[in-house]
Image (cartoon, rainbow, N blue to C red; front, side, top):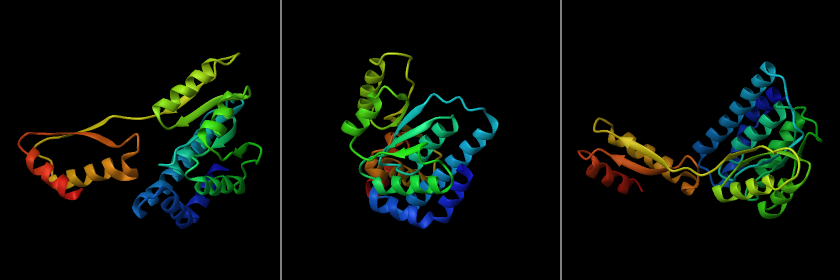
Length: 226
């Protein structure tokens, strides 16, 4: 099913890119990378399914972000399915149509409708109810550190076995540039990393460390690029 879905993603590439551009504000190049990453996730987990026996826990809640509405959503859902779980998928409320199209393609590829259910709505209502539900057997979450801590506390307060939480949250990322680096390449990488998705990515550059011999020139170039 995941291999067929990966093929469908590639065939519907332009439509998926268009949705990512309209809903998540992505550039064309960024949207193309998004679709390619989603396809990579599907093929990777399809391979995992062939190599490992599933050990499902029940219903996994997958809560995904707006900044990678296709790739991270696909990765969460595919991983949970391959591990032998059903999935209650709650995408970011800012990017509902990307999620809806992705789930439709997975269903068309053969994933049973009752094994993957899409649930739209705000995190503080729909997401919170899903996490707190006694039938929730695990959570995959990508978003803010603050919300991850709320989910962690909710799961810890539940009776019964420990419910696993797989959380990908914020980052404080640095780039170290020595005196031999090509300044034009540095500036291009800095601007892309720091400002795509308005800098609202866990992978976004936060701290630029420059060798003193090149610092002034590179800072001027970064300012010009910005």
